[in-house]
Length: 144
Length: 73
Image (cartoon, each protein chain N blue to C red):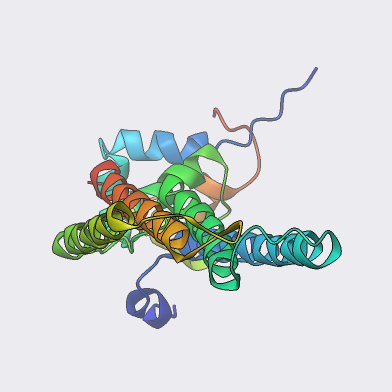
């Protein structure tokens, strides 16, 4: 029996199948969001945010969807995961979120010429970092 | 009306006979607990390699666990 692949890989076959499934769904989601963004901005001329913030918004939605799906299905961490690894990642993501919160706190405005500016992007990144930290820690607690 | 149950109750019974938890079985065959749970619930069809590992861990044959038939026998 060929056990080499199973022993060498970090995830077991069920986790890999879940990751492939939600990776594909995330890819479809990012394509749909990009198309929607193009339609909203180019077709309807609704410039709701700067280009950087548009990108961050789309990526944030997809990352949140992907991480939530993996966490709920127990496929975020390798089954032979290191507890220190899980706690360290969530801690540093939480710290990153706090840094973005500080930047948001010091921002004077979230709009430039009626468009969401970089400070609004920082809000998204803060939410994204803290959400991911919470999900990773939840995954760690759930599978402990 | 016939009710189709996709749950792998045979696996659950074989595991229970050995007084083994999902976590213990998972550790023995080097997979995650969620994988065992998904197989028992019928949400995942394991590869033949994994089936063999499970059978070896539970001291049963492939027929005993994975052959079609009455799930409650």
